[in-house]
Image (tube, rainbow, N blue to C red; front, side, top):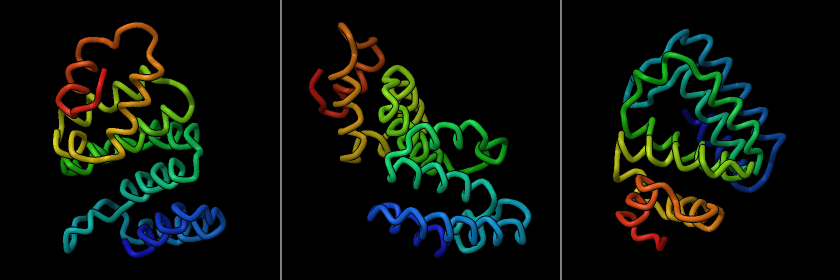
Length: 156
């Protein structure tokens, strides 16, 4: 988990080489573990490494890579805590927003809200994504998106 946290810190400052090295090392450690485990509330394993790969890609502005990583995550995702899955959906909403797919970004926000509303409604980054979705939506947003925006306090 420390390798994953380091990778995210490196992604936030745009250090692509360090992100790649730390994610590679985390992937090797996950391979040794062999499956997703929640020892000491770390939720460490291959699935969480993939989620961090997607999140790091978003931080680096590589939305397409994040979306592709998301699509390859697999069954382990459903076993994660709802809050963790909602947080991931927020990351992927950002990825879709980066590539201009506001419809899919909206879907990810709605899915995250369904799982763990506070992960979506209370995070400033989610408000930014929702504002971007609303700004880029042609015409009125679909009713569920408008309703979520209202719950979030983001102007339609």
